[in-house]
Amino acid sequence: MNKPFTVICISRKLTFLFVLPMLICSLFVNATEQKPSIDVSINDTEGKWQVEAKMQTQLSAIAFIKLLDSTPQSCAWMHNCKSVILLKKSSDNTREIQTRIDSPWPFSDRLILTKSVIEFNQNRTEVTVYVSESDLLPSAQDLENSVLVKHPMGTWRVSLVGTQYELSYVGSADADVFIPAFMLKHMLLQSTTKTFENIYALSQKPDEGSQ
Image: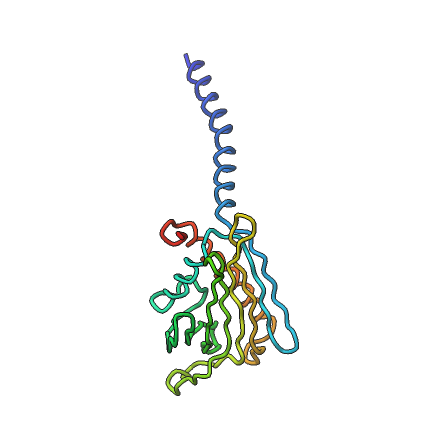
């Protein structure tokens, strides 16, 4: 009397054992597809930490500048960013910016004052953002529980490589004497990778990655 039930039960088990690996494989493939391929390197060059990173993205040059311009309202896409304040906008392509970065306990927050100059190519399909140290000085209140990052420099670039956009960044600042070198290198690697992952995630959204 129990034979039909046993056969059905075994059949269901076999079906479950067949479907489960396919489901796991599908989830793994989907997760892999959502992860961008990011090349990141951190090097100590004559007392300066230099960061180099790049990845392919759907974010156009214009959309990337819109993202940068939105950071005073929300800088969540920048890993460990606590706030971004637009200090001065002297022209359509030049901005003076104050960025506050969260540092792990027991270290103080990092305060970065930079000047950004934006240069599009003729048809605005590619853009370069040159970042240098600002001439503006932080107030005493701004420096409370914060350390000013010295001599920050960097270059963001969105360029066309074939039919794909490529986002790249090269940046440096004086080595931070308050944070051990091994910890700082790990922080830079993690924050750069996470920032690029966040940008990639935003580029998958139609409203963010539009032309």
